Image (cartoon, rainbow, N blue to C red; front, side, top):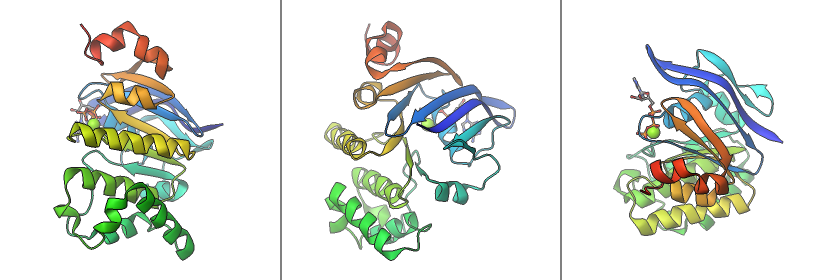
Length: 237
Ligand SMILES: Nc1ncnc2c1ncn2[C@@H]1O[C@H](COP(=O)(O)OP(=O)(O)OP(=O)(O)O)[C@@H](O)[C@H]1O
Ligand SMILES: [Mg+2]
């Protein structure tokens, strides 16, 4: 079943044409990765899905229903959990308060505490740091908090924008391990990464974005074997 679908999406910043007709699909339960170089339009694609940017043309649908014209908070309530590039945690709020912000769309206390327990199972470090300010967490802990906050929304699909950025290799491994566990638990994920190798190892399928256009789409295995992908994105010569 198709959960998320973008059809011929064009998004601009002023007169800069950042997305030039993007079409992609994410089926329920899949991890799909969007790989591409700096400036390719990966973040713009996620911002367009979560309603922070309005496309000039094209459509974005969740469960067959268009999200266009809905404000971002409504899109969160519809089931899109966006974990933004740079994490976007609140530095002057504690870990607990940051997680509470993630749960803002829910009023069901039982659901909130069940989500919180789930987040702590994935990221035991967050439980230990509940009263610490977000801004004093390490980079890796901030990434855990950003993902934890996204999961508090109980989203139908999680949009992850460069979760491994700036992290030491051991933390990159653990973030991808968590992504794999989320997948095993049935979470649908659209994963944006510059670390194409890691992304393709965890994903089912992928799209390659170049200068605002999708130039290639295939299974993750085929993309890993693709000569252009190996040269340009996996650093082979
Ligand atoms: N706020 C903005 N105003 C004007 N242009 C922007 C803005 N944000 C992004 N762009 C431009 O849109 C294009 C796509 O940017 P985007 O941030 O989506 O790339 P990206 O693939 O996420 O890159 P990175 O890997 O560096 O995060 C780039 O050419 C960028 O310069
Ligand atoms: Mg980006």
